[in-house]
Length: 336
Image 1 (tube, rainbow, N blue to C red):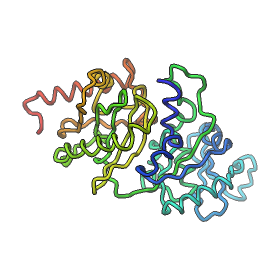
Image 2 (cartoon, rainbow, N blue to C red):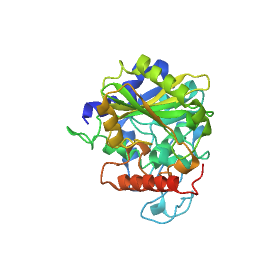
Image 3 (spheres, rainbow, N blue to C red):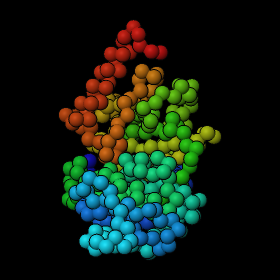
Image 4 (cartoon, one colour):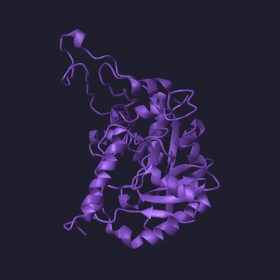
């Protein structure tokens, strides 16, 4: 994998070309002082001071060196316990608030490559839907997974020359509360040919996919040929799509081929073999039964950037899971 291939998968790079077939997104350059705020891992946890307190969240002060959270009340009398002043990013905050309003008041935030999925638990809804600058700052600052974007984006590149991009971006995507997880798919492209499609949410069995599998394959294949193949410059990559109720295909994201991108219901060995056959056939895999559901991956790193390379811990974990699923399928008591 080359740096240029990783760079093409940054949302600020691909979105302008695919705006008409993707989810509406507004993108802002992150001020470097805000980047440093996200990287700060010592001292108390402070949310930014907002321009007006209308959308501010209660300030939670947490010192990693202590066990408990503590709040400093006004007039405590102990000057040494007063927290440092909260950081403030007024110009950036104003731009973000304008974009939230333009996108209908609710957005899904992500950086160049990754979304802070591991910090969704900290929100009141348990999701990444954000309605204010404070909520966005909270999920970004609380996320360990974004360290990949901020510090390790090029670790798998054979021509690595730096550890981070020169500039980071915040992408605010329009929030759709009715999206169905079973209708999101990962597509694998090798030598500019679509070789495989996988159900994206592999931790659940969706019977409707069995009924619609052929139609979905046709829709996604046509979408690739008409909208992606001649526009995305890399020869090998993956892309995620969402299929709407009325049969429209929406582009969600791009990821590099191999390395830390999860192959989901495939292995990278299988995908490499499929690509070497150079056939026109696209292999489409879905979870065929409840027995074939993959275990959930609860981690503090981005789901799409787990190290599943041969010999890694996750590689062995997934191999063991596959072996167990095959054993269950051979068992006389296997579920239908």
